[in-house]
Length: 140
Image 1 (cartoon, rainbow, N blue to C red):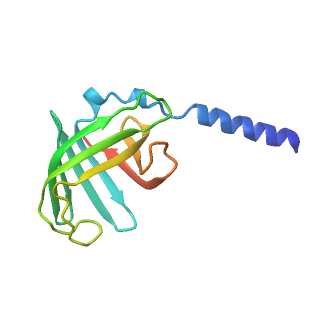
Image 2 (cartoon, one colour):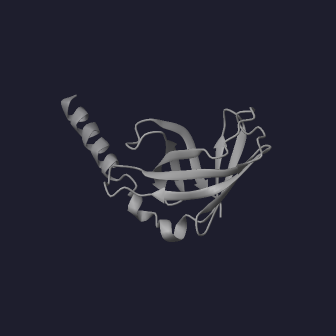
């Protein structure tokens, strides 16, 4: 029994050591394009179009927003990258939450827990301990 426990612990450490390194995501070249989030609970897809030099367009259901964005990369390997968005325009229509909310001038910050160069789980803390179960996935 003791050998099994040690083997399981060893495998856990190996898998943890093989976590995706955020440095494999080249933000300068790879982040531009269309990304989506599918919310299974709400049966709704949110779409983000990220364009140079740092603008975004958002759409989900009737909601449309535009604004500026940046990816903030911490030098600390254990800290997550942060997607920072400043909403400039909002059509004030409902999105996945089915409620009309005006995000004009809102600052939105989401931590990105990279699972691959094209997939990141959204988290609300820099350490990745409070994640949402929602995934930002590159479409094109």
